[in-house]
Picture 1: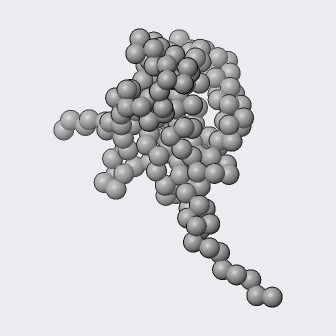
Picture 2: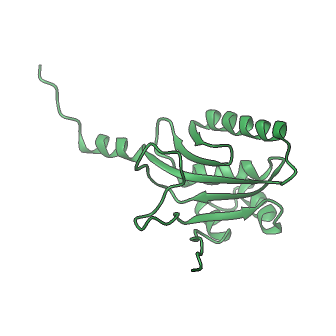
Length: 158
């Protein structure tokens, strides 16, 4: 019996599974090498438990899902988890975008500039209140990112 061609929805699902977002961690300057390794291990353990794949260096990563498309829920859950990690002072999370290559660098837009990102400082009082509201189920992931200021682009002065 001849095999049927793959249906268009399944093809679209396979393409959406290659979505990724950039993650940049900012650690406190006095973080020791063993503390940095522990943070990296905890991040890998978190990713494995959530069905995420994290690639890159110790402070710059690309995050994708192993068997499904990555979503805004994954981004916010990761941010929420990162806020409580010792030694971490800031986080930048890029917008969800298709993976263009196998490089582990920060994704660039069509003009070669870094993509937009959401930035937060873990000690910011807004983040503390926002985290509590999110954990109580009072705000949705999209609103979480919007309250943080939404996606912004880096400014380059010439």
